[in-house]
Length: 63
Image (tube, rainbow, N blue to C red):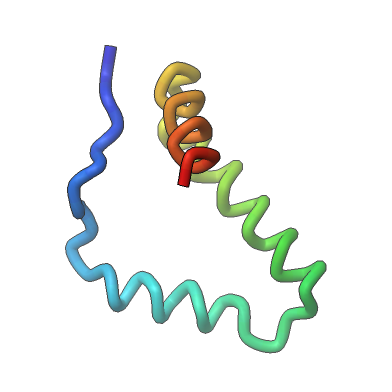
């Protein structure tokens, strides 16, 4: 079974964060939440493994 990568893994984390912020510019709170939900579903589909997704949910809830 695969494990989540918990150590820093983004090549350009600041660039990603900037891209994410720009994507939310001008959106209402509802539109921003909908964008986040769509992004989560797209990334979950990319991961594809239910065990990894469950682990990620549990980790996110614990923070």
